[in-house]
Length: 200
Image 1 (cartoon, rainbow, N blue to C red):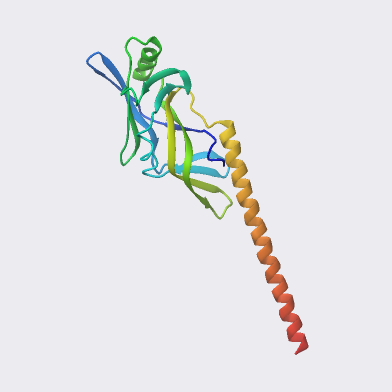
Image 2 (cartoon, rainbow, N blue to C red):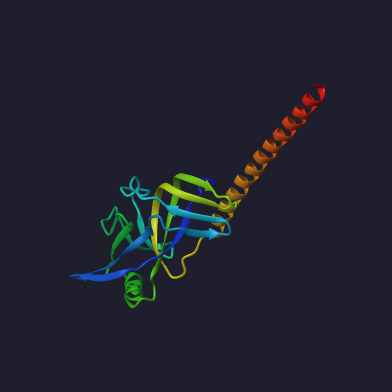
């Protein structure tokens, strides 16, 4: 998978709301460490602790459904706080009470109508594990985070799934070629050994 392709990942979460004076807040985990996310048949991912540690100093936005016109908060403006803890990536969004769209989302989260999220990032470092059944698991070790979103229907992007599937197929094709080369060597070695025995 190209590390330059923007990734989107969906996460089930438990948002909380609170009011700090006149400022409403939405809080929750936008990513959970070591949880296995099924991307598709034979493909899964997990996020390693510390994957976000080098990116949280950047300028990150909180959006609604990945819509860049619906900005809920921003780290640069101090209206989005993000931090890692032992569980995952936790965020606190300060909602603008004068922003009707933001307040509408706040009320939906408060009622429990919106309780899922997603995040957009680039892969910086990852580990690849090929399992005995041919399935592939990726562990994201470091990412460049751009945005977190509260989502109505979070889902993996089709382009991300296709890219992961192509990567899985390429890995398995290389494994098959390596196995064929090994078997060919075994057969050739066995044939040569039999001929040597006959010569004796």
